[in-house]
Image (cartoon, rainbow, N blue to C red; front, side, top):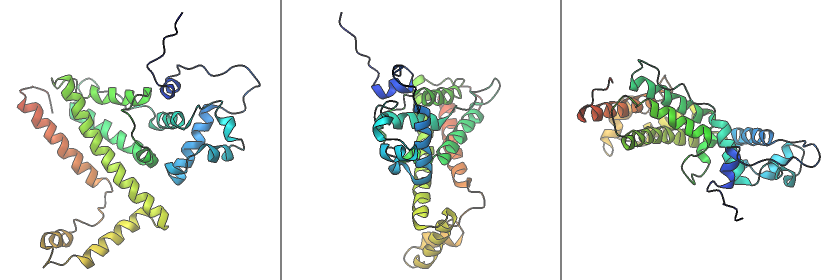
Length: 253
């Protein structure tokens, strides 16, 4: 009888619990969850590039080879790290809740997750998200658009548009935080220094519009650290609202 191979990659099988763990042999002293937790701790403290099997083994007072009993390879480890980091999504759109309020909740929850785990954005994107929790986040995001009357492809495209904005914000913020950490400074200090440098370099005769923006305080760090993110997200949602209206749908904004 010919065995039918699974279309699900090995690493994803682990994330979905489709692959049985070995049960024979001595009682295990490690678990996949413990290995993943240590890997995340390293990534949060030092960035994703610091994560390696030897480093994790050292933190666990074990050998790198011993880890492969629980995690097949680095690709599988990374998927399990991401699955653990994203956590559970926010509640789906509630009865009577507007699509905009629901998608805002989803967007802010997504942004909060990325800010809690800035290393997430350092992981190379090799394929669309396909782990259980990542798909659950997509499901919740799509639920916000259920009453808009949009086509399914439009809903998914709009969700990707919003997610792309969130990821860009997280990417830039994460890179600046990483640079600040490498220089031994705080993120706030780096922003303040950048503003001071611009004030010194940008002259009105060469860059009149930039000078005008700087003098107006546009380059200063806002009192609310989320102000820029909130402004951009609101403008994207304004555009989606117009799109829904021009399509002739009667959805509540």
